[in-house]
Length: 125
Image 1 (tube, rainbow, N blue to C red):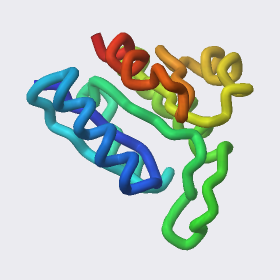
Image 2: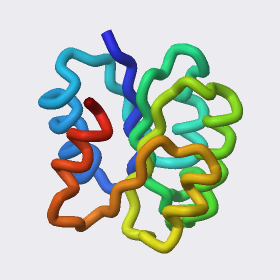
Image 3: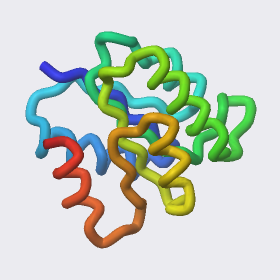
Image 4: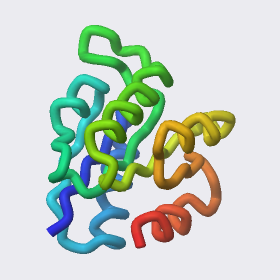
């Protein structure tokens, strides 16, 4: 069974992503995180197969403002800790695609894109 980590601060979007994982991946152990801190704690190198990572995240519960830097830091740390985990970045910051690719994401998908569900299906295939 695949182990999936969904890192997203918007509750409705987390639920939608969980539904997409169920539909596209099948049975999976899904963990959800809302902040950079909780995502870092939930990511287990060598055990987490797939990460769906929003870039604009609050760093922790004491700082509720979403910051792109938090997601980029997570991406870098996760890739360094586990080169085999599949990391899919989901963000409205399309201008960061090259930065995320250099940092090691496997797929980069824009939130709000009409073809997001199709892009997610291709990334998870």
